[in-house]
Image (cartoon, rainbow, N blue to C red; front, top):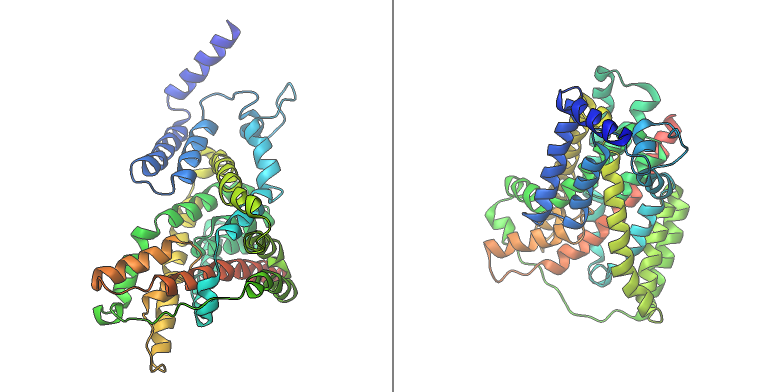
Length: 398
């Protein structure tokens, strides 16, 4: 009877409108689940995020599930909710982002980049929005009562959203202990990553002409020595670790995954990393991100600003890559298709597919997928290095 009474009181409390914010979170969670199932937008992420958002905003605390995280203090009987366990073990320790990057590294084939090393510059140019958004956010936050060290840290995390790289965004946000903002930061990063096919095409069309989108690019099938594929992840890890130490954990885990793929003697581990590890960690990461979307912390003006500026960063990252390609064409005899620059963001391989689809719409015989993939894998590295640079910059300023 005591349990039934508690349930009834919780439902009544919810029904009279005292906890109206939870209703909004139910709607947001429902929308994410709808996009995952109906629209097939990154269902492995959006579905668990949406469900986690609903679970964490139940009208009464459920001991052993969400009590510890919702209450912010240890439950009366000392029991810790499983969502809090996942958050503490996977997000606070940065374990989930590291494991995700091992899986991504095992999925990536850098062969197209070896054949088009020039494309690595697009992976750098497409990070422009990160630094522009960092400055813009830093100028806006004081008007919302956020300044000083907190403003610097939050600006860094918001800027990284533009790379469409969820694990790096979580890594940066957690590095600066932005617990109260992890919900909107993570949701923005993964939502925009899943909406690449919707957001990027209008930006690309606005910055390019039909003639530019029809530019053909030559691609030559050449074998890459196995030794090169094995040495590449090792050398990249050393260089990144020396030049940008803050990026070493993410670059190292990405390159470790790639080394497992290319070494040729760990095929079973490579397949496990690409499938079982990637699927399991993505599932746990999604529901844990959803558990950070507590209504009282999620529904506020800062959340709206994070979502808006995250979109701003993403658009400028796309624009930066395209404009850089157009700039290079002023000096190149053999022009590059400027759409390749848009693939320089970290959303692999979605952005490359979007670019190829747009090229095919303009000319069904135009095939630039390999060049787009080259820029895309460069963007994966570029976003990690950019994240390390932002962390180093903010650390110096602090």
